[in-house]
Length: 442
Image (cartoon, rainbow, N blue to C red; front, side, top):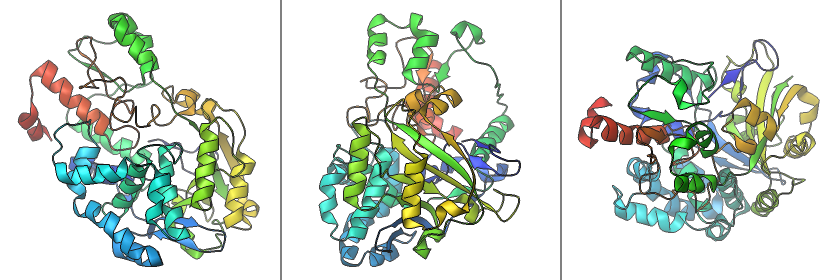
């Protein structure tokens, strides 16, 4: 959650996260009074749009019935799939944004969701008959950064459908930094202290404490704490698998993207990649170590809805595609060709750009190993068993040492739930504060 003037003074670009459906749905973040500390959510008219070659676009609106109606022949099927998720959203989010729980709070609804969600998106697509319905689903499922033939990719798509019709896909006014700033201000109002600008290389560099929570991936934790862990635990951590990477471009545009379909200009997020088959082929090619000529591109156009992002009539644009881990291939031309395909004249409105490959991401944040922005591959084997297979994934064999990063369940995303669950474990094990008592702290 970082926003910087990375190209020119006055132009504010989100370095990593940009659109925040999970923040709006997070059981933890919804409890925090962040609005009192400057956080303002902006909701674009449409959460997302997905243009196609015939000039049409599948549109994900905040209204379930409107979205379904726009999908034509898929209207009834969309409602039958998504309405049960929306109707039980609060309970479901507590379950699927938590660690693997043998006793979910809503077992029957969670079981129904799980039966659908565990399927690969390439199989679940059969429920949609229209090209628009299949493409919209593909774009959401591809947020998994996995081949669409992978188990549980359907769950990602269903979660994003549900989030659009409940909390929406908002962006913070002023940039993603606003979320971090509001959380920091609230924390400090409670008496907390924050120290930055100090790279920790050993536990000996930290003040004495009962608990240390690491917002790091296994590689960094081994480097800092490895000698305090049993050798068997270190070997498990060393088997942790990192996922694919990202290649990102930040733009300053002379004018907004000239989308062929006007609905795309009303969406905070635009998924650029063509139909289901093309997106599936792109993600499969990427996962096999190649670089697709027609990549799936995620685009966020914040300045259309937030006038704080630029000092004038120009615009910013945020776009990235998935690439193999540690790739240094320049995907600029491929990304721009894809956007141009659905927005003729796009290249003519580019004023300036800055790119980040996987190495740039890792230099920016050591957690992004090889450009992996998810804190580890999030396939079925590491969806809940992260960083290792354990009933309590946040605790470690060393007393007082905990993982709280996206390398723990529920994984990547701006939702705060990894840290929330880790804090619960630490408060109980180190301070004797348990379940019901903890609720009063919130």
